[in-house]
Image (spheres, rainbow, N blue to C red):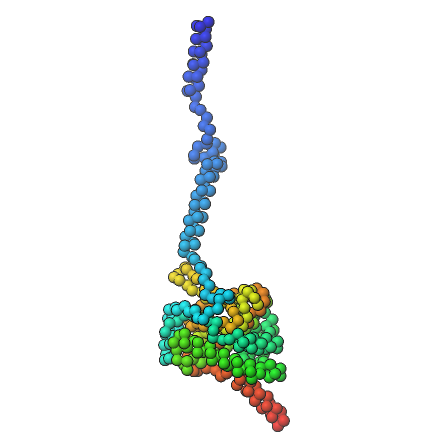
Length: 341
């Protein structure tokens, strides 16, 4: 029995030896392809996905380290600012031009904001004037203007001369004009003080106007106020730009922040925000160092006044009271001519 059992064990060993000469089937496919050779294996798919994720990650890192846009709040609605400034290097074209005007060359280009130049009471009177004026006409789109100097008033998709409307004489009283002129003088002095200019070298220039912005759909190019631009390129006469805000961001309207766009090198950019506040004044040099735009208003109504200054006497303009007087003189002349005819 022991011999017989030995024979059985020997046969099993032989069978095992015989099986060792046959190639075993691999549990996994070759790294060069699947068992069928027609589709990638699971391992290959994992490899490809890993490479794809790595490439996307590298691309994202390159993008966000090369093209960066930062945000900075220059003035919030909650703050009450005596004065906040930011000096900047003048753009070369601006500096070359303004160097022709002695007494009007800034110590530094840049920007400032203050809540102490114009009083809330003065801003309230000007807001009443603006609202009354825009009762006589508004743009069909989201941006309306009222220029007390030229008389231009948005009306539908066109502009009309507000001084040709009989109602204008009742709305624009001597009090309104006197406050407007007084505010303009205070803003002019603030520009001169902040940029160290001779105040007499600054002259009010066109366009200086009230603006009324809403979330209305733009009908003409004049309604598209949100495009980035440089004032000196848009208006040749500008050397210094100021804004007086008449309503409050976050209370009277949403959106509508003023945004400076500061380019730092080729790919880096910082958006610098001013949140409008009633009676707040912001001012800046009008060259390429102060590219800017206004965010689209999403609700409510945003009122402000743009007051612009030039160093070139050729572009200086008179105070708006003369526009009223000239309108009156034109009416009298018309009546005289009609009577003579």
